[in-house]
Length: 236
Image (cartoon, rainbow, N blue to C red; front, side, top):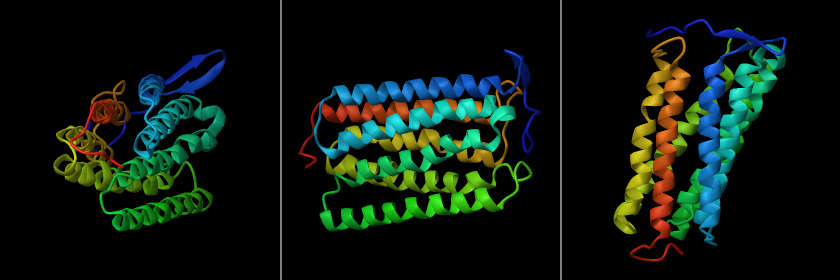
């Protein structure tokens, strides 16, 4: 189905009326995978900010994915409040992604400008999100509060892991290709959401997107791991 969503799957458990079991399954898989990558990066025992911020990205992204699944399945009990933790985790995780890629820019003046832009963008996104959350009716406008978060994700991921990652492939190591390849893998999620591409009621646009995100962050981890094994020149 394209251009429309299937009715949400409803089921009962422990006397509760629950929703979207597949969202909980795929979000949990994505969350566990991302937290696993955070642990693996921590075990690299690298001290420069590049690795620290990657660990924080994977950790926050993973926790956001897991809480997102809970927000879906317990929507009848928690309402929009249950979705807020995952929505906030989104821009925060992207902020750490931006910081990790900016931290190794060879021009420190340019890096400071990028970092300032990243700081301002995070503040604006959270303020806009809060404003929409307060002023827009819910559930009549279900996706409106999420729009600034989605736009922020697209801008942040493409500009840093994508564009900077491509530049670093030439500047530092071919292993940086894993970052912009990961971005290319995740890019279709924007079209999947906007066009509402739903393969089946039990495999909708959210499930499709989560699989692409899982593959994308796996490429990110492969890049971090590969870079940790040696570069043509130092990142610091």
